[in-house]
Length: 406
View 1 (cartoon, helix red, strand yellow):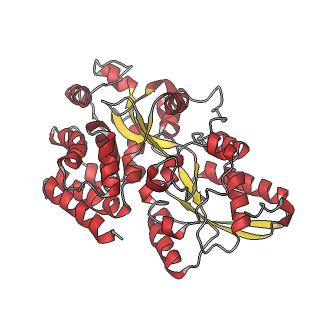
View 2 (spheres, rainbow, N blue to C red; view 1 turned 180 degrees about the vertical axis):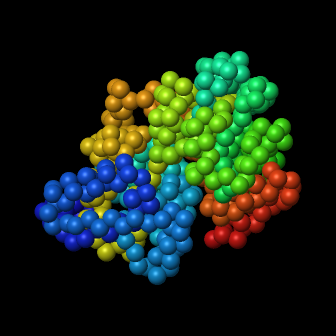
View 3 (cartoon, helix red, strand yellow; view 1 turned 60 degrees about the vertical axis):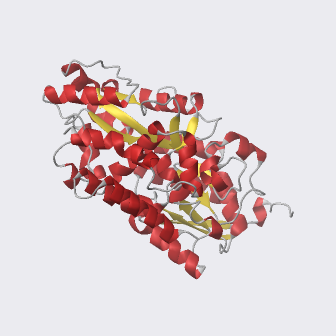
């Protein structure tokens, strides 16, 4: 193969579509800094980073692949929610990825064919994200519950919620107007209620979405809903606009959230106090479900592929990931990058968990978007409100997969 071009040989504009840019201040600041540093090192290259709204991004990406026109770098969700749904239109990157990148970066499986470390890689993972439960220690203490709450079973979670409710405390907060909580709870439920091969069988199509294994994934949320342990306005409350802020304001004792970026310790600590924000992982399993925060890809129609790769290599370097950690609050997915010694205890615990426990692909990121943004987000809300059966929702999932099958 041809040798990589010297930096002095790189020129032109690298167009980047970015769904986080201008949406999160810390991330925007970090990327402006990194783009300026790259351009200084490569004076012949200009980076044009274009903010794209997440709500319409999938349609935009599909249109770009249909017309073979678009950016040089597409930022994508990991797994089936993004990169692995569009891999036929993306450059395989195996010949470009250096041994150093391969060794130091984690979460390659969420950007690789069949979710295998040895599979063809269609993108470079940046950052680390997952699902975790947060709880308000002060409210737990008020209800006579332990402030070091680490449930081993869903039954323990339900028992704690019932005790909170009996004490006049809202057990759970979090909006589900958009149906996003259905996805997050499904991810935790599939992880805890099934063996790992179930997710693999769903991915390769050897298991139907109508199977009892899929039904089991929704049971933890259904049981809590039927027990009246969620707020009555749950389905008219936005997850990000009202749900997470409600937890931060101390209006409820528990919520399912993220490792970083939003709906996380970074949002809750300033209002509740770092010492008052507790966490617990999905019960009944020792592993943690994780994914890359984002994946950088090069579409086959990119006009400036060499410079695009140089930008991706730069943005996944130790220096760049450290900048994202320090400035944007990212979780590092490089083994040689650590969070600051004075980082919040939650951040330190999550990074430690990612390195000490077995990591599995978060089921939400391994589920095709037609299933996620239809029968799960919308259909399961109908199930929870008693309008359709779980079997009907599962049938909708199976039909969504069959309609989008190659």
